[in-house]
Length: 263
Image (cartoon, rainbow, N blue to C red; front, side, top):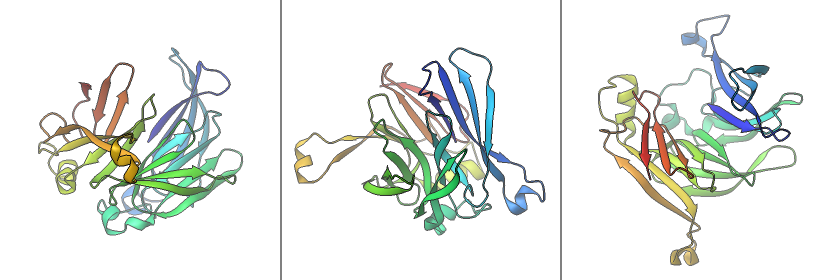
């Protein structure tokens, strides 16, 4: 997981938040899992230099971090634990889906679990109004979360997609983009056994429903913007849309290339 955030103090300054799955010192990672931490860096637009600011670590809270959302002050972030243990099975999001969580860390105040017992939490993204979106892999839905005064989170809404989800992103217009996995077993085979096989991919867009059916309680519109059988985009896990240039960027954890579509 990685997030790049414009500083609230200087619009030319950027903070980079990155999950670092370090090698453990006391035993092989294959036996005890990674020693996962979050690294915070600072840079400026156009610069070739990056300054390391802080390593944030708390093994009791940063357990199995998947994705994160940083703050514009360079001091805090929310993140997803996709599992409740450091050495999960690749199939654990489906076998033990309610062991995931959303955590919060502040460089001066420490870390805490902001929302426990979530359903296979994966990607996380933030809206301009402060709402957080979390994708559920096994549940096939997106959870809307609102921040509380103590930095805990409460669920305000959900949007059902019906397929497994991985990462998500928010474009400049505030629309939510989802990397959708229509065939879970095919992507598991693609990632773990045969990366020459085809893994179908879908990118969905979530927006406020302004149609007639919004009157009947359908607050959000979910539409498939990109669908492929794996010939063009195989093993999709990430999708991001540039609303100014009208380009959709897609990639996957085992994909051989970045795919760009004009939309």
